[in-house]
Length: 98
Ligand SMILES: [Zn+2]
Image 1: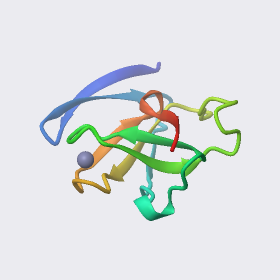
Image 2: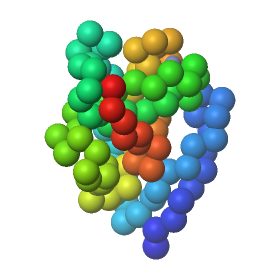
Image 3: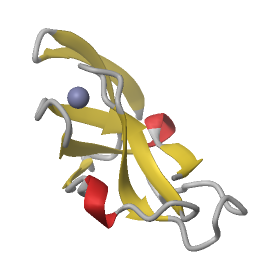
Image 4: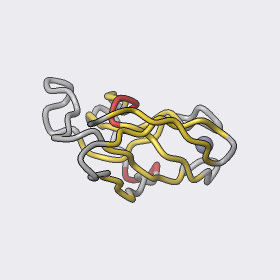
C-alpha cells in the first residue's frame, strides 16, 4: 500500500510519498550564483521561504527533457539566498534557463 502522507516540518505541511517502506530522501546542495552560467539550462527550486529561484543540477538537455526520478523522492536543500533549509518534492523541481 502506497500513499501520500502529510506531516508538519519547519512549521509547514509536507506531503511525502510512502510506499513499500522505501522513502528516498536526498541531501543536495544549491549552486552558488557564481557557478550558474547565463544561457545554460538548470534544474532547481523556488525557495519556499524567500521565493528566490536557485539552481541545483545542470540540465544537460537544456529544457528538452523534464526532470524525472524512478521513485517519488524528497530533496533537502539550503537556499543560497536566505539559507532556509527546506524539503522539496520531485514535482516541485523547476526547469529553467539562467
Ligand atoms: Zn530562500
